[in-house]
Image 1 (cartoon, one colour):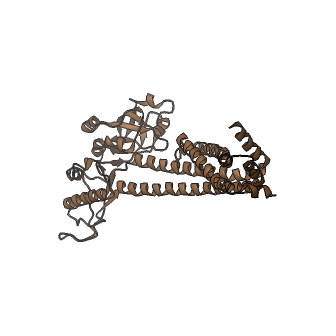
Image 2 (image 1 turned 90 degrees about the horizontal axis):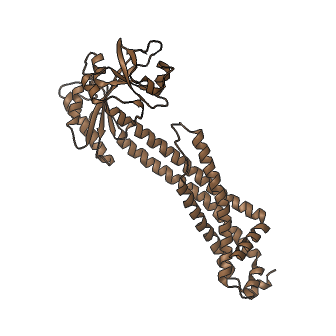
Image 3 (image 1 turned 180 degrees about the vertical axis):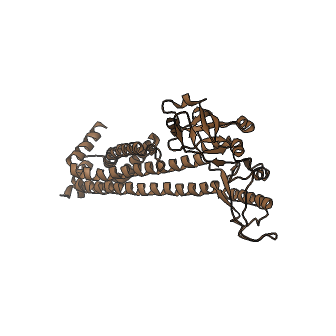
Amino acid sequence: MTDLLREIFQTLKCNKLRTSLTGLAVAWGIFMLITLVGMTKGVINSFEKQTASQGSNTINVWPGVTSEPWHGYREGRDVELRTGDMEKLRQTDRQKISDVSSSVYGGGTISTAHEYTSSGYEGVYPSEQRRRGFKMAAGRFINDIDMNQKRKVMVLGEQMVPILFPDKTPAEVIGEKVDCQGLGWTVVGVYESRWSRSVYIPFSTARMLAGNSDKIGSIVVEMTGVETESQGTDLENDIRATLAAAHDFRPTDQSAVWTWNRFTQFLKMQSGMGILNTAMWIIGIFTLLSGIVGVSNIMFVSVRERTHEIGIRRAIGARPRSILTQVIMESVAITSLFGYIGILMGIGLTELLARIFDGSDFITDPRVDISLALEVTAVLIIAGALAGLFPAINALKVKPVEALRDE
């Protein structure tokens, strides 16, 4: 084995330029494969993160204007959503609808004794935290007791803390008082956020501030047990039919209420991400394949140049297996050595990209797993063996007498 490795090293050393140029193609192919896979992974991670934060299993409903006459009503009639519609939607399909909620927006200045900001607020249900995936930096989110007792409590974003409380940390502002709409509010929580400055209060309290009006601007229906696009579409049609019966408009009137089925959109985008991932793998593999073909071609040249040497070895009793092993091992050595360099370059670039795009909404954590590097290494060894197999077989076809005559 030691003699074989020495021979391989000597052969590669005697053909430095040819070996380097051939290996460069392999290294570049691996580098491109790792980079493309890492970038694709970053885009997919970003997509999954955003859909998780927005809620991929929800249907949003907004009021619209009828576009068709129905039951004596003319088209052009405004449809107004009301709080009673939420209970009707809950009864639509209890097996597929896990939660129905809404939100109320209000303007105004939020202030402390020394600071203020014109932020406004959003009245929400406790389920808002789960649906948007909020993580609390300190304290808690809105809960059912806040809703039932219409408490004047407030949840701030991390970005609001230094504005209203410049000298305090998120944990220190819990229990502090702020003013809004002429009322005193208690800060009960601070949620983690890099950009958002939204302020949340209980939905019931927000309705009270709005004069206890039962009009609402939107409804969010949370689904459960819905797994296919057709099931999501059927539930969306059921929701539209329920609202059509409540507000007396044609169920097929698409403009009477506007819906956004995040679940079906998520499935379509997920399919698109799968196609993107497959396309990147195909591009990367074909790029790598061009390098492997280069290795195979250079091994054919190497065998042709060493025909005389092979003839001598065959004449003095060298077994075909030893010649086959040497040619294949030379090919494996070239692909493995330069492939490893390509892996290091690719991993290094993905680490750099992870730092550059840290906090970006477009690419999230494009780092490549060590498992992928091991898989690529295995592919390299197999590809190197295949690249050297055909030149090795060609070398065995040369008869010793003809090889000795070769100049």
